[in-house]
Length: 303
Image 1 (cartoon, one colour):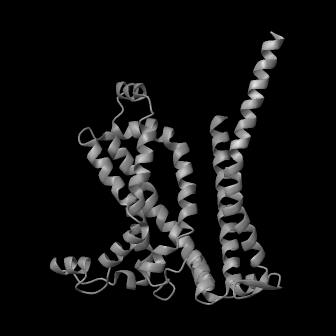
Image 2 (image 1 turned 90 degrees about the horizontal axis):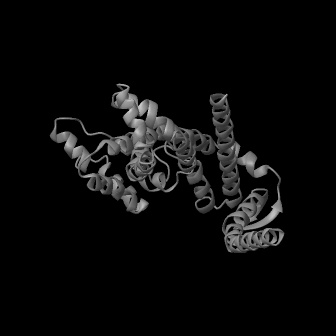
Image 3 (image 1 turned 90 degrees about the vertical axis):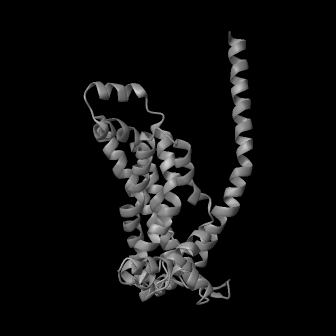
C-alpha cells in the first residue's frame, strides 16, 4: 500500500509539473503583451518626453496637467455617462432576450442565428453603418423615414444630449445578441423538475422567472455586469468614428479617446499615459468595490 501511495504521489507531482511547464508560454505572453506595457505606461506618466521617448522625471506634473484640463473633466463625466446609459439600455436587454429565447418553441435556431449575427460583424463596420443611419441630414435614412411619417428631422449625433445614448444603442445592437445566448445557455442548465414543481404550485411564467430562473442566473449576472462595466469604461473607437473625435463640443469624449488624442493629436504621450493610469485605477477601484459588496450580500444570504 505504501508503494502504491508513493507511486500515486509521484504521478500527481509529475502531472502538476507538466501543468506548470505548460503555463510558462502563457505567462510569458501575458508578461510581454500586458504586464510589460502596463509598467512602461505607468513609468512614462512620470516623465516629460521628446517625441515618444522619456526625457526628464517630472513626478506628478503630468497628472496635475491632466486634472487641470477641461477636456479631462468632460471626458471623466462622459465616461460615467456611458456606464449609466449602458446599464439603462444595454444590461437588462440581453437578459430579457435570453428569457424570450428560452420560451420560444419554434424556429429556435433561426432566432438564435439572427440575434448573434451582429456580433460577428466588425466593430468598425457596425459603427460606420450606424453613423450612416444616424446622419442628421434631412435626406439621411432615419430622417427620411421620420419625414415620411410627418415628423421633423432630428439632429441625432449632432445633438449633445443624444450623442452618448445613440452610441450606447450602437454598442448594444452589436453585443446584446451574444450576451443573450450566454444567458440562454445557463438557463438550459436549470433542471426541468424545478419548473415542473413551480407549475404544480400554481406559478405562472413571471413567477417561474422570478423564483427559479433569476436566482440561478445571479452569479452569471454579476459576472456579466462587471465585464460590461470594464468594457464600456474603455469606449474608444465608437465616439472616435461616429462623432469625429468626441464632438459635438466634447459631449461624447471618453477617457480612452482623450488618451488617444493626447498621444497622436497633441503629441503629449506622457499625458496620455497618465490618463491611462487614471482610467485603470478607476476600473480597479470599481471592480474591487463591486466584488466586496456582492460578497457581503452572498454571506448575508447564506446566514
